[in-house]
Picture 1 (cartoon, chains in turn cyan, green):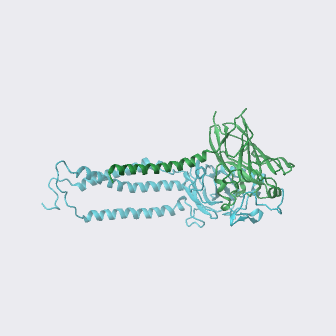
Picture 2: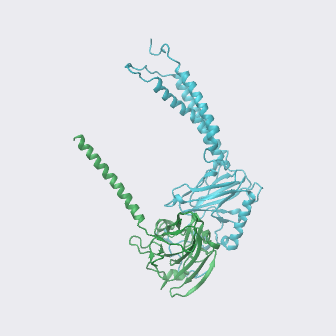
Picture 3: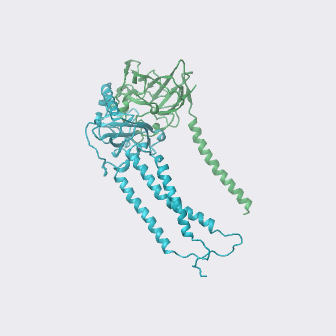
Length: 321
Length: 241
C-alpha cells in the first residue's frame, strides 16, 4: 500500500467531521440568534444600541462555526488518531491537500471580506453607530436642525456634554443654553451630542444608549443616537482622567417627548429666574478653560501655567458684587 | 553550583521581590490611612459639621497647597483631614469658613446652589478687623464670574450637592489673606457659609470635592491639591445606625 492510499476499513474522516461540524455550527448559530442575541450588550434602548447588539450577534454567528471547526478537529484528532497502547509505529506521512487548503483560504477570506463590508455598512447606516465622529461628522443622522425644539416635530435635539474632573453636565442650546447635571432625553427623537471637556481628556459613555465619544478640551466631538425606549441609563467616563475617574458617573433618563419638553422648560425658567442662565458663558461648541469670557480676560499664568488659588484678583478689580 | 543552593537562591530572590512589593504597597496604603476621620455624632436627627478652607496648610510636605480642614466636634480643634463621618438619614447642618481668596469656576454653572435644603446657602463676610459687611445673605447663586465671590466649592456629586463657597471680598482677599493655617477668625478676612442637606437612608462612602481649578502652579489649575485626599477632596462616610 502506498503512503497516500486510504487504508481499507478506514472511515471517511472528512465527511464525518463535516457532518458533526454542520450540526454543531447550525445549533450554535440558532442559539446565538434566538437565545443569546436579545441579551447581548448594550441592549436595545436606542437605535445605535440596537445596531451594536445586531452587529455583535452577526459577528458571533460568523465566528462560532470557525471556532467550532477548529475545536472539533482538535478533539477529533486527539480521540480518533491518538496512539493506542503498543502502537510504536510512525504516523502516516502528511501531504498537502489542495482542495482543503483552497476551501480554508476561500472560506475565511469570504468571511473576513463579508465582515469588512458589513462593518462599514453598519458604521455608515446608523450615522457613526453612536461613536464620536469629531467636529465634522461624515455620516449625519437625519433630522431637522432647528433653533428651538418642539415635541412631535422630528426636530433634532442638541445636547452638549461637558466633562470636567469628575462630573458631567449637559447644556441644551435649544432651551436658552440651560445646563443640568441630569441628562434627560425624549424618546423617538434624533439627538446630536456635542461632547467636550473643560480640563483633561474624558470619554462620554452612555452605555445603554450605545453612545461613546471622547471628551477632549477645545474639541467638539459629535455623536448621534435616537432613544427608542423609556427608562434610565448610566453615563460613565471611559477615559482614565484622574484619581476619581472611577466615580465619574451619573444617571440619565429617557422620557416621553411631552415630559421632556415640560422638564426642559421648567429648568430653563428656574435658571432664568435664579440668574444662572445669565451667569453661564454664551453657548459655544467648545470652551477655553483658561479664559473667563464674562471678565474678558485670561486667567493669570505663573511660569506659563495657569494660576489659581486666590491670586486671581488684583487691587484694581471690583470689590463686591 | 548545586541544585539545593540554586533553589535556595531563587527562593531568597523571590522573597526579596515580594517583600519590596509589599513594602511599597503598605507604604502608600499606610500613608493614605494616616488621615484622621472626624466622627460627627447625630442628635435629634441632625448633625452639625464645620469645615474651613485655607490658602495654605500646616503640613511639612505641601505647605503651599490650598486645603480644607475639619473641626473635631468634641475638642473644637481643626484637623488637617478631609474625611468625616455622619449618621444616615440625618440632616447635616454644614458651616464652612472661607479664608481663601477667589478663583473663577471653570464651569460657572456650579455658581448655582444645588442639593441643599431649599437650594440655598446663607453667607456672611467679614474683613480682617471683624467688621461684618455682608450679613446672613440667603442666596441660590454665588456668581463666580461676575466678581470676586467664590473661593472653592463643596460638591458631593453622588448626592447632587453642589455648593459654591464664598470668599472674602476681592481687595481683602488679594492683600490680607490668612497666612497661617489653620486660620482663625481673628485678624483675617473670611466668609461664613451655612447650608443643610440630608444624608441618604443607606450608609456608604461619598466622595466630595472642589470644582474650582485651585491647583495653583499646576496645568490649568488641575492636579495637586485637587486630586489629593486631605486637601481639596475628601470622603464623607454615612454610617447606618
